[in-house]
Length: 363
Ligand SMILES: Cc1cc2nc3c(=O)[nH]c(=O)nc-3n(C[C@H](O)[C@H](O)[C@H](O)COP(=O)(O)OP(=O)(O)OC[C@H]3O[C@@H](n4cnc5c(N)ncnc54)[C@H](O)[C@@H]3O)c2cc1C
Ligand code: SF4
Ligand code: SF4
Ligand code: SF4
Image: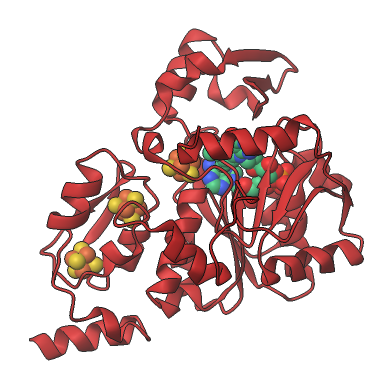
């Protein structure tokens, strides 16, 4: 029995040999210390990593659907279980962040914008994320991108997507401020045996991805060419923000939402050209429970981090790794993106410091 169990793990997770001696199961680890404790980020890393398919993603959380084999893999990939920033920084960068890097290790900070008018039309801020993905696809750096699109059944509800064409990347541009477990699209990439994939996700998802990498779950991490992390203060429940507030209180049908952006307040733009404001203080009531336990604002472990930081039509980019630098510079040299220096006295720079420190709990 034990041999069969090990064989299943080795077959599904080449390189995960070192995990098989672990005897802790889901219920005494993630269920009791993360999910029931209200700390679950909802990233779905545990669900996709279970080699015995014991977990289902249900209501934004993992749910045990058959007897756990206590292999210990799910707890190795969870960003909310035994998280160690120093260890993970060493894994990604070979060193810890210094006192001069309050938003994590980085090589370059710069403002960036897509050059393509179609991307600029559909994107959230400067379209850097979509421009990099479209560029990487066009130049055969990747064959697919893990992103988040919009549900065809529930308006403005984000759903994980595996984009394989430029049109699909563009369809997924823009931000939905409710949660999208993009890891489920990475599972789809593995199913389709994609060999070169870019991953876009929130900081909690980038943390999970790095833990999967450290746990050597090659099936998922080997194809990753680069990971773009979005900056993130919080995400909201769909029921609260979209249904209770926008639909019931503001009287805007979710089908009518064209775009939402957060610039000190939530700005809801409708298809008919109306603009409604939701004060951030009011929206806080809809913050997902797991977000209250989050310590990473700027996706500190991503290859490239991207955020709006109050800017208009520019994306604030933090380039952190060699991989990130390579794809960014290549897109820049080929004219897919344009850049300008960050004003180090400016509001965006100060906001990045402030929000990063606030999330880390540093006064
Ligand atoms: C939940 C959430 C909260 C955020 N909070 C902040 C913040 O507080 N401060 C800040 O500066 N920036 C925040 N951002 C990032 C910001 O909204 C932009 O995504 C970022 O500036 C990149 O802009 P862009 O024009 O380059 O991206 P685009 O080219 O428009 O591409 C955006 C990418 O994000 C993906 N995406 C959209 N919604 C989601 C989602 N819910 N989950 C995962 N991926 C998604 C899309 O698939 C697309 O690939 C947040 C993003 C999210 C998803
Ligand atoms: S990965 Fe699956 S089998 Fe292994 S401990 Fe977690 S739930 Fe149980
Ligand atoms: S944070 Fe992610 S990995 Fe951890 S229990 Fe929640 S969904 Fe699973
Ligand atoms: S605040 Fe953002 S990064 Fe943190 S758990 Fe929530 S969605 Fe994930």
